[in-house]
Amino acid sequence: MADPLDFADPFWDDSPVETIAINGPEKLSYTPKMAASTLPWEGISMKSSTSTAFQSIPYLSKPVDSLPGNFTEYIFPFPCLPESPVSNSKSVSVNELKVVGQGTIAVKSTATQSIEFLVSKKSDNGDAGFPKLSLKLTQTQAVFSKKTQTGETPLTGTISIKRPEASQFIPQSSPPGGTVYWLSIDRSNWLLRYGKYYTSNALTLIEVKLDADSGKWFEGFNIVEVKTDNNNKKVTTSRLPVTMDLPPVVVTNEAVSLRDLDLARMTTWANLPDACQSLYHNIAVLPRKDIGLTTNCERNANRIPNTQLRKKFENQYLRITIGSNKGNSPGIPYVMEVWPPGHKSPIHDHGDACAIIRVLSGTIQCSYYDTLVSKVEPKLLGQPIELDKDQITWLGDNQYQIHALENIRSRTCITLQCYQFPKENDLHEEKFRFFDASSKEQTDFHPNSDCTFTDFYNIMKTEWDNKKPYSESQTLSKKG
Image (cartoon, rainbow, N blue to C red; front, side):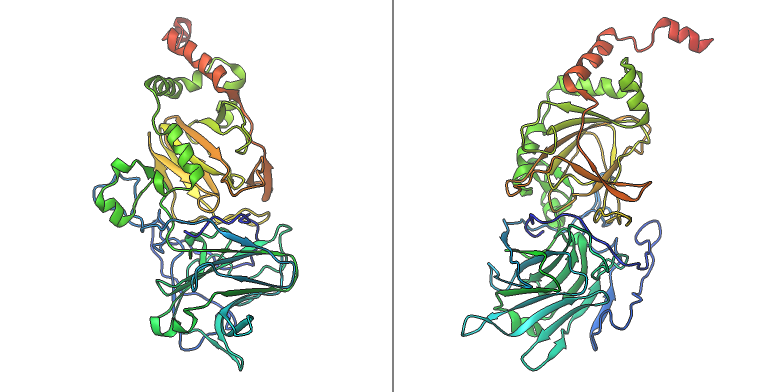
């Protein structure tokens, strides 16, 4: 995964494209149907990867031998490094890659006509020289090419369309906050990747696999130019390319085997962003009395004596806040959520915060999405995963940021959510954003509380101490 980018707000608008269900109950073959101007390369090997089958998305692959049913096989992830932000108010922004010949370049722009990424060597006079590696985006094209002083030729290599259901192009009208477009140069593996929104491999749109000989001409490139049709943009560069995403399941160092490392089907806390590491250690081990409380809550939540809480529980899930807001998270950082059977959250983000989620009781299903924008349905990334009691998952400001949770089982589920902004975040938005399924609008949500943990603890402790979930009169009335 590339470095976290501080501009990775999920705003976009796409043109209508063909949608196809892949890697669900049935496997379907897909041949991209694109206008001649979409990818105008000649003599290039073309292939389309199904949007839910490309192996870089960690929660998609087939189950692996002796793992529990909810685990899947993952590709080995690469750690990330802090990004190097730059910005420029001109129509052309110029910067240098921190590692010669590799890295990720991203631009957040409201452009509606064209965006072009150019990467080259520094000339003798200090300017960007030729040849140049180019990625040009318009409303109808996404083209990789080699530019010289005398002309332009398309790159030779194998082109993979990674998400055929998603638009590769610039929208005709830009969201007010702009859209993030990114280019990744992976020198070690001779891969070029282009994507939108978060700089995550799961959001790659086009991938170009080069052979070593054809890619040697840009080995020493370090000058970056970004051209847009307007002045409203922000450009950042990261030291590392977009490679393999970390898997969503987190385990202790002692729980990882050599086969786990080889297949990268889970990750340890040490690979997570710093904010996630701090949160993980706070909730990885809980005392027995807390486990007893959650067990009682699961069994008796539908008989909560408090009438107001019971009504909320019957209509939605409960948010029970723990502690106070310390100014480093969207709302109170620790939240216990009680999920009745069949209840779910809307599709939402987390204000670019990091999070750790532990299942205290029951089972929760997590589904991940690409972005949030009004009037456009968020697109599912891969297949949902299920997390059982004591399993832990994570999300960062650039990976798994947008999700929906659902209790698809017949038992109440209880989760513990913990939030913290990464240290690079100097905005600290006190809100989540969610997709309103009825209005099709992106809507702000300020994290609230149905009940404090102290009050909820006292309610459930009383229920526990009485040890009589039903009174004798209730039992008799049910029999009658």
